Image (tube, rainbow, N blue to C red; front, top):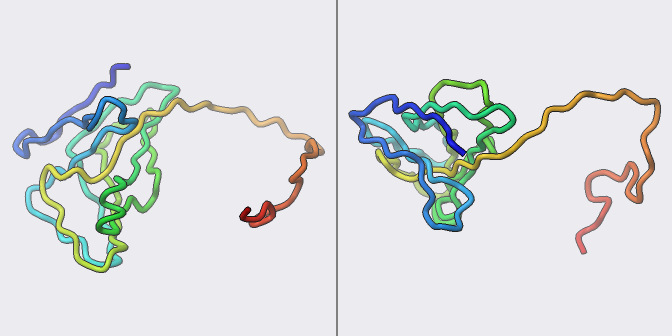
Length: 147
């Protein structure tokens, strides 16, 4: 699949998102910043990537955490997954949060999140008076147990 991408600031040496391995589902997104950013404990910041893209209709791009940053530093994507709709043309930014114990330094070019392209369906609502019964029925939070 081809996706059109626009680099917004060539001066920052922005790299296009890329797959780390041949089996990777997500492309690594990098910070595009002119000065380092310190993400303090329990702080959240919107980190620019310096990229805008045209996701095809029928798809969306999802921004997801990088497992290593989450495990080693407690840094995650707050609204995970973040959604980039097919009609959005602004800069892709990543909402990071530091849930770790220490401040986290973000530098230009650092891999901060993953980008996954997903097919998505649009729906039409069908209003009915009743729904079919299932084994779970109206059982909500915790109704299926833990084992």
